[in-house]
Length: 361
Image (cartoon, rainbow, N blue to C red; front, side):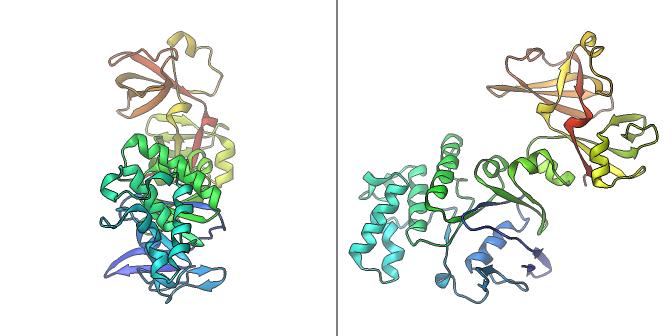
C-alpha cells in the first residue's frame, strides 16, 4: 500500500497500491525501467521501500528477511547449481531449512512430477534443454510451498515456440497448486496469455489494472493502448455540435462513439484519442463502400507493406494525411492478396474504437 522506492534522484516505484487475490495469477507489465522488477524485489525482500507497506494477510513484510517470508522467487537466469543433479537442486532449499533428507527428496520428486520431469532427477543442468532448466527452477521454487511465487521474466531465455508452450504450462501448474503467482514481464502476449489480471506500469506508477480482455478492448490511456498490442491511434479535439461526436484534427474528422464520450465525461473541445485495433478495421472496394452503413469512417490510402503472419496478414496502409494504419485480415480473406502500391479504402465503425482522454506523448 502506497509503496515508494527511490534510487538517488530517480523514483523507481511511485506510490503504488495493489490488491492481489489469493490464488491469483497476477501480471506486472511495462517497458524497461518502469519499476516492475523493483516492485517484485521489494516483495521478495531484496529491496526495502522508502515508504508504504507490503501486506500479506494483514501482516507487514517490511523488515522481514527474505528467507523468513512465505514468498519465493524464480529468477530469470534460473540460477541452478551446475555441480548438483536435478534432484539435489530441487531439494537444496529444503535441506538448508533442516528438512530431513528423505522428506526433502520425496517432496523434490513430487515437485518434479508436477513439472513433468520425473525421469530426469539424476541429470545435471548442463544435460538439460532451456525449457527443462526452466521447469527445474520452477520445481525448486514450488517445493518450499510458498504462499506467493514471484517470477521475474521467467520465459525470456527460451525460444519462441518453447516460450509459448511454457506459458500454457505455467498457467496449468498455477491452477494445480493454487499458489499466488506474480509475474514480471515486458512481453504483452505473455501477460495476456498467463495472467488473470494485469497491472500496466509506466514511470513507476500503475496506470491501469484489469483483466487481459478489459485492458485490450478498453484501454484507459493512450500509453496502455499503444503498449498492449498493436493499435491505430487517431487524435484530435472533440466536436459535439452536429449531434454525432467526432475528433477533429485540422481538416480531418473521425466519427467516434457518443456513449464512450459520455461515459468518459468528455465535452466539446476536449482532447481525446480513438484507439482502433487492426482486426477491427476492414479493407473495402470503392463500389462496396457505397453500401456501408451511415456513420462508418472510410479513408483512402495506398498499401505500403504486407506482412504474412500465417493465419493472418498485416497490411500497412499509408493514408493521405501521412498517417499509417495497420489492418489485420485472415490470410484467406478477400483483399488479403493485395500488395504494395495498391490503392485501397479502409473502414471502421465508431463503436469499434475505444475512446480515451488526452493525446499520446
